[in-house]
Length: 262
Image 1: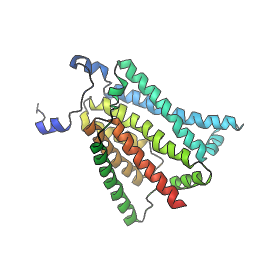
Image 2: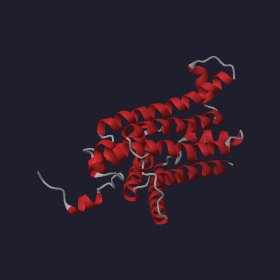
Image 3: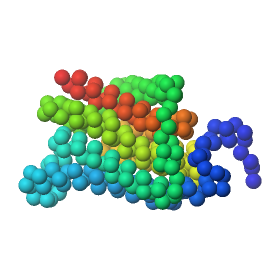
Image 4: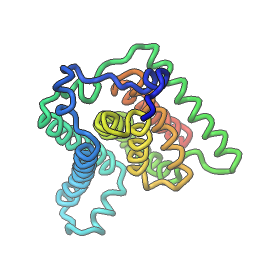
């Protein structure tokens, strides 16, 4: 069997949990355990979001039907609260999965604050990727932001839900999605046969699948950003870094869309 090169080992050697070598393996969910718990995390996020819409429907005295949920779910305030309610549900399942393994929640998800240099490096890389897609969109005559998102944000601004939408998309959504993708999925899959490169790619694909409301062009952009986030998660061993980068990306898009729409 061919041994990995020194360069490869140095580039893709994910920092382990703060446990002894003998205890490291049983305290990390590997490929299938991570996949199954990851599916539960996704379901929990979805249930939390749908639960908020159901509460809105019941509160307004509407019949509990798919039509009522679609009607209410299209309103900016309800959609914002739906996104926000997905966060505690995601956190709860992630905590349970990690608790069962007897590992530290902070260490398992790499909730370590990055240095300012790491934040700056990650932000510069993100700006380069976003600008590259912006230039490509303009050259192809495409919109830089999905039309339905533009309509939603402008509607939210006009209806007094701007701050709620800003919090939902710039705080709650980045935290929920990063805990799922670069937190839980990356941690387990990087410790499996996939190693770090495979974990970055697969977790980015899962993150992309969370955004299936977009067309293939925007999904390709999401995937490329996900790969960069995955690399930065590995490089800095910090989930807070990707949460901050994700939040900056979303906040910029939300603010610019609302401002340009004014």
